[in-house]
Image (spheres, rainbow over the protein chains, first blue to last red):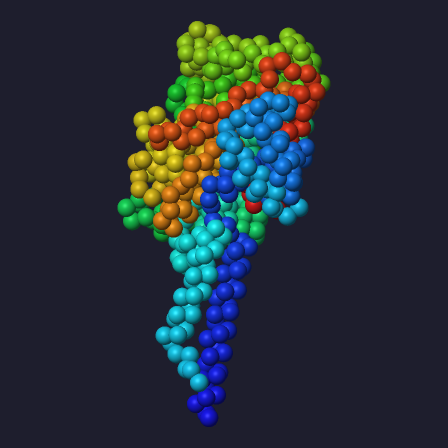
Length: 111
Length: 430
């Protein structure tokens, strides 16, 4: 019996340790996000559009916009159909896949 | 009852490891593996602060230390607005609280005096020694005083450069304030390459804005080492509209370059332009990479640091990266925005390399806004990609040559938004 209690106690310590480890990893998930192609390219937008793409002064926000609104603007800037001061110069560098993925990225950020 | 022994426990931990691996999009594998690589970043300007910030954002397990001698950083962008009395020096002054509190960067206010690239150690002025797995240098510029006879750090207290913002900005602003109406301001730009190529034009514009309001009989003489260009033409169009007859432009390129300066007489001499005297002289000297990069053997004969633009690794020393004004990243201009971009790309590359991955194909963005007055701005932008190991411009250019005042006003407003955005992004403000 004594031995059984020890095993139970021992098991719960192990369980707690695992829970703690998983919890610590989940904290990291909030703090850090590994750089991949679209993450790096989206982070480039933050220089002007501000942290988290929330907008900066007269520079509009990106986060939480409808994906279709972002793609419409970027394709418009790229073709020149949508007038811009600087965005046309940036959008021309992007290919169609990049425009779609960037739009998806920013639309998925919480508003 | 099954006994939960050590072996089972290790297996369970392994399962937790699988959890972290399968969420690889969220966790960098080095974070999942729990490595605590040490990255030391030297220089807390747009390049270094951004790099330290994003290293921690991309991998929160990294031990990141930023070494910067100053407690606060005064930005060169928008420093011309201080000269014009539009903004105070406080507006362009930033601290490192955001990086410390929001990003977990260790900040050390110290100066690097030597780097041992073989032992991967750096020595600090305080006597401390730090070891690193990767070292990122973002030392900015230092001045090549000896190229101009009579120019020196000491004489810059009389003829300020104001090309590193802070006390020099305030000094030049005070000189402009003290100048009599009808006085002459000389601005002399340096031989290329130098920090912020269009900034002498912005400076001439905003000093004219200030003088027109307060001392309208005054004149500005701009000795321009860059010579004529499409960009200059756009500024000259603006000057004609806003400051007719106030700014005289002198071609200071090639043979026109300044060769000597006389601080007592407040005069500058160029080979073909003779000796020109001013009431306020803003002599911007020729530049090279910040001193520590040169001392550490990271600069080539040009005085700047050659790097692989994919990760900004030095081509001269292993495990050391050089970003910002100090590195050779042609055709990207040496600007705050370029340094910020390079800081992010260098951070991403380091995290990816430490986890055994390969850097993806990404764009490198840059821009520089120049104000001609608070409601009139021009911009220059560039986007670059790596092709065969070199950066190639894929798009960009200048603002529309012909545009309404409404468009120039829009760009002035975007310039303010850009400044707020880049300083928040760089210094980890949220």
